[in-house]
Length: 272
Image (tube, rainbow, N blue to C red; front, side):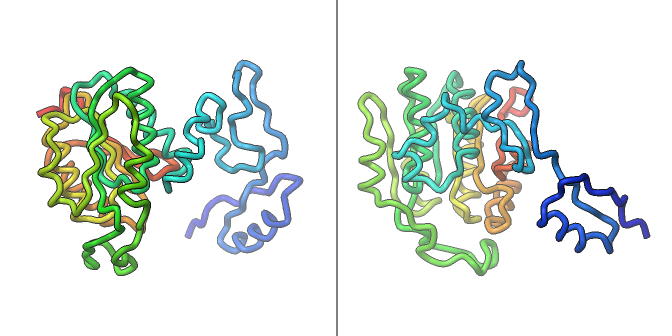
């Protein structure tokens, strides 16, 4: 049985790397030690945004650059569970869709931080699109252990109150419609005829399925949907719902590496 190629560790391996290698050696694998100094070409103007030398991914991390500092300002950080990477991806997708006709839809407002990021995109672009943002504002109110997992508990994932979220999102010349209650029952209150951008982050199977189907039935050509915890094992019920809704319409979902998000773009070829 071929267990893989054994690679000699580079000089300068840390104690942790040496310990891991001792554990992996019996199965024919070793961890390579990364060089302690990472050289970024001078042609790259924002080299400081790349991961520090001991950061294994060593990927470009624009969410930490000065130009993206707004993603980490207090009113956003204090009101979201999304990482800087996720917030960056969400904002970039929202920006990409700004010229697409239709309103904006969000299922799972939480404490309002992600909605605030989307609202900032609209302000930057001078857009007066409406945002329809739904949540129970009281945590999980209905769960299905068979589809959501036994670890999910009623009232779990409770975030800020409706009043607090309303204050956070109160912005002159921008219309944010907050709709409290259980999805799918509250979807009838969304009066959007067309949707240009959607963010779905409700974790559970039933509201994810209903929200996804609702959005896909109204998604404009070139409209974009961002699904938050698509690749996260604890929210597998949401992924099965997304797959069910998208496959039935012949739409493809793309996973965002590292964040666990996923997205789809309603290209004219797939538009109904």
